[in-house]
Length: 506
Image (cartoon, rainbow, N blue to C red; front, top):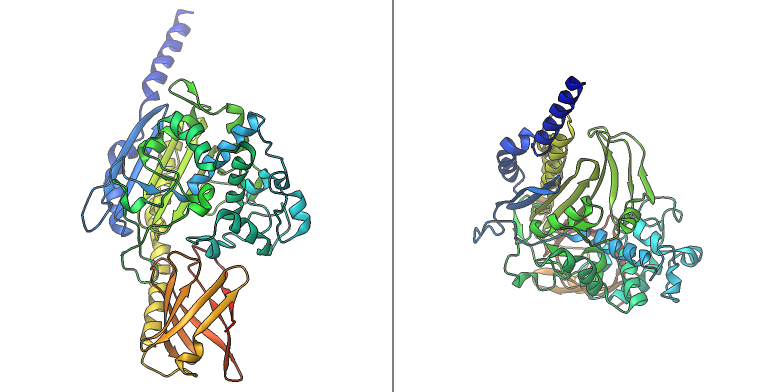
């Protein structure tokens, strides 16, 4: 009997001792891995926090937030966390559901009687839960070229959603939808009289002490600790970008934060809605955000220890080496970020970066998950980098090939013939003007869209956005009877996949 008690005591001591022990990768290799990743991926700066067993075990910045000033990244450096905003929105709505101020199953028509989608049947049935689950039948990112950085109000965006023709059936497939999250967020004000910003701040940010988190990035250029956004899209050259203006899509994408604050948010997620002993969000509400509402895939991953993936309310759900993982990524121009938590392991991770054209922020997350969840060591960064470099090489070649075709050739018609106003039903209008240098494009109703057109040959022009993140593409005009009829405009797939047809109206 004494021997059994002694063995139990030894096991207890061993458990206590191991409880706070961190994997070797975290204690010995993390710094070197990240510093190599910054170099390999042309990434100016990165901030990271890891929460384990209720404690922040890593909170650190690497690299710089601005390559000109060399100001270092630290735990207070601000990044646009973009779609990581979504779980804040869904959590606020789930808490309102718990408080019986709304129901997640309420039809949107209850709050917005005139709200319609492309399909009238969907319009009649769509609920708050549907909008938070990305399954109204549209494609991923559909409409975002229209909405992102636009001057359209939230109501105007909601009104435009009826023009988004779905490609799949209602509640049948996953199609990531920012305008859906905007609409869901607007339910907060319709139901409570409090704007989304106020509700998120009052119910989540303030109780958690997230004093360095902002519901708007409109003034980010003047924020003391803001990281500068960068991109290497299309040319491979690290290029500074303007800050996005996303207040019109705020419930989907507008939060600005730092790892010090996000560690508090993640600590609450791991403690069933509690932070520092106080219940911030009811556990029942958190559970509802984690219920899978949309199946994304039930097929085994070819490169990760994962067998399924789905979407709850503002959060991705998957398995990773037998553990349930909740996560999300966020992408704004010049920023890509992630948050991740594994309740069974009392583990959470957030990684914030300021170059939008790299996969290191995700490779690092997987590397950390591998270390904590006992997955055989694989250099995730090296694996991802091999494919990224090949794709980037092809993209840069396509760009340089187009540039080489600009040799002063003469287009089919005088430049003045191309000038005028062009319209797309969803997008609105663009204006093309001519001068001695060629053609320029003004995207009306948008803050930061502009482009130049340089003639190549064979009726093709090179479209060059002034914001490097949006891309460089070939463009052709449709000409009938010596007059311009229309043109098709493409933008970076990271914003929207499908091109837009613009018809000349004058």
